[in-house]
Length: 186
Image 1 (cartoon, one colour):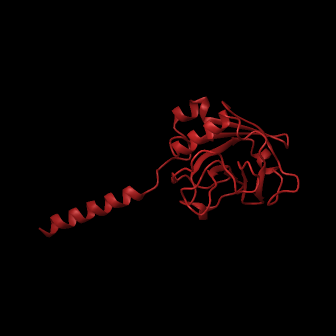
Image 2 (cartoon, one colour):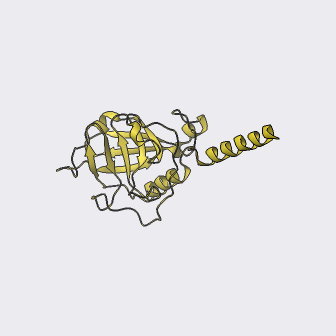
Image 3 (cartoon, rainbow, N blue to C red):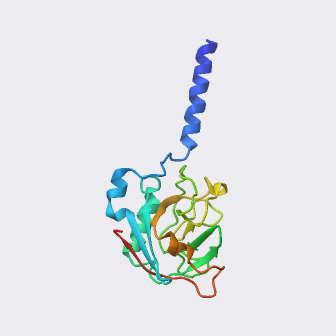
């Protein structure tokens, strides 16, 4: 009888833990994700650089769908990187340019995963509420384990980190770097 109760308790704990666990995703995207041109986001920047981001619908499907929708609408064209902290990250995607704005679409629920915050990781920016991401995003300049489980990772820079490194610094920068054009297809 005790063995049976112990087994039930172990299964209940395991089920509870797995229900709250983040999505397990590899640093390397599945082949089908990488092969789909819609999962490549290209940002042409005013600093002369081009950044290509591998989007990860396998890890954050709703966030990737939102980015793709906004890119197709031309939402990001002309927006600035309004918060750029050396050694940490560059944040953009706010039509107000202050960190207080977003698109007219509803906020998104968090889609946490175990993808680490490495140099080039791209994640959804948000307010204090984990379910308040909308259009803003940030690109990591360097690793940061303190962000794990707090923001939704939806991509990684696969080319153009040199352009990211040249994004004007400040909160906001005196002469901010703009996204001249955002497009899908790499």
